[in-house]
Each structure stands twice: as structure tokens, then as C-alpha cells.
Length: 63
Image (cartoon, one colour):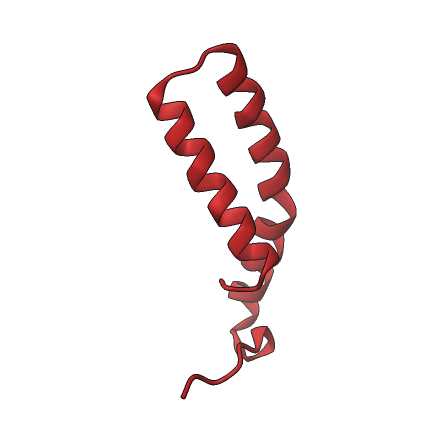
């Protein structure tokens, strides 16, 4: 059975890194969305989907 995730069990440097990544992922997603709307390429779409998935994982505390 899986134990519940507790971010306070992580080392301090990983906790800080996770906090800063969680804070900056939404502006990066917005920038990538604007870039994708201006110059749509396959790479931009893939990067946007990956960033949105990462933002969702941070928001739901899966990472």
C-alpha cells in the first residue's frame, strides 16, 4: 500500500527547488501558450502539453 506524500520529508534543497518550480511553472505555460498561438509548430505543442502536465502534477502534489 502506498504511503501518503509528505513534502516535509524531502531535504531542504529539494523542497526549495520544488517550491520555486511550482511558483514559476504557470508563467512559463502562459508564455509558451502565447508563443504557440503566434508561431504554431509541432515542437511548441508538445512542449506546451508537457508544461501543462507538469503544472497539473505540481498543483495536485503528485511531484
